[in-house]
Image 1 (cartoon, rainbow, N blue to C red):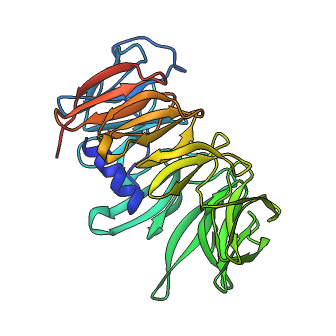
Image 2 (image 1 turned 120 degrees about the horizontal axis):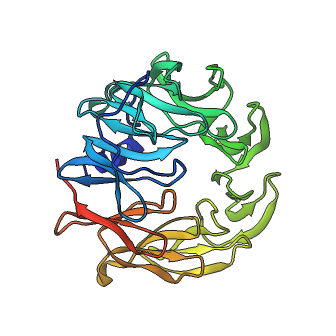
Length: 354
């Protein structure tokens, strides 16, 4: 539970932790296994280990924290700092950083310093623990497939956004402001209070001409101009007019809000799932987390792309599906659940509140 809170904080502020080298882990592997098998982190008596989708313990719960595997490595904590283990339960990168994120596109974000007080600096390492960029940014996000990572840095006394590439080269523009990370090959920028997009070479791909705009995903994005709202394609041309602003597309649908309730539109701007939720998240592998209205209990579950409830809304909190599984929580008895894509409980246990 302590790591769950940490991850929520990191989304608002920065990321978690890591180190470098190799050795053997402190958690014993108790089952022989296929190295390609999904391993799921679980908590027992305040310690973390791994189990398989059948609910069998694969690595004993001995770590202060253990995260999901990503690109063959998973974050673990010795109680003070974080490192990475592989699926053989060998320490690949010993605990050496005060914060870190999962490996994405070959690199992980790491930090040194006290992130809770905001006195932390962020950098990047590769899967061997080599520092691509030593921690020196105020904030950093994971690398995208374009080989670019969003960073925040000081320019004089001003905090500005820029990008770092996989050679460690930093780009901070002089004539426009970076608004978000790259997605679908484009990054949102603002120039003279109008929004446009740049490509991975940092040149303008869609001229700034929108009064509001969003990130591209699945080839489409939200844009507003002259008081009208549109779905636009990657050339900047309108695909369809829409009545309400919306988020990014995933599995062909995007979240929108109407009268303080959330639903989904399709790629043509038509309502695919009527707005009936107090909150709704993007689809991941055909499922989206939704929260029922407060008068209906305000609980969380998952729907499919037809809007049908696949995982009943009985949880106080849910995480997105990762490698086909999701964690859900009930606060009244401090219980967490590991769910498969059908809502079946693979494992449950008590989480620790710090």
